[in-house]
Image: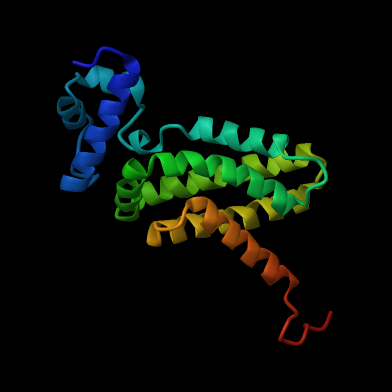
Amino acid sequence: MPRSGAEARRRLQRAALELYQERGFDQTTAAEIAARAGVNERTFFRHFSDKREVLFDGEAELGATLTQAVADAPDGLEPFEVLLCAFRRTARRIEDNRPYSEPRWKVIAATPALRERELAKHAWLTEAAAEALRRRGLGDGLAGLAARTGWAAYQHAVQSWIDDPARSLDTHLLRAFDDLRALSAAPSTQASPER
């Protein structure tokens, strides 16, 4: 039996991920997760509101880290540079948790309900980044556009890192934002539409 709440939480997360990989998310119950973790079902629900939330733990902390990182970015940076600073800070957590994160992503990819929850999480984090940019003085529309575009580059970097773990996530992030800058500076090869 785990002695601390943090230990019980980690055991529940590990047990859930194992069971989701073995049986699938839909075929796994909270009671089975609790039993695998060596705790009772009541303990499971003390830590998580439902079996989906086991995979999305730390969302509020990630949002707080992201918004604080945007606030802490040096003055005078362009919005994408501010976001890059913030994403580089949050990326450290993902890299540190790779042994858990990689199988977690596979479970989410295989489960429509979890993909939906992941998209909702991404939308919430994107809005948190946009609000943090607004607090730095960026206009409402530009803050939203920068946050959505920056988040897309961040997700692209994470996927590249999953596909190519030989290079750090930070390296993939720098490349994604370099590519984003190159795309925005590239001359158009198509004629502009009539206005």
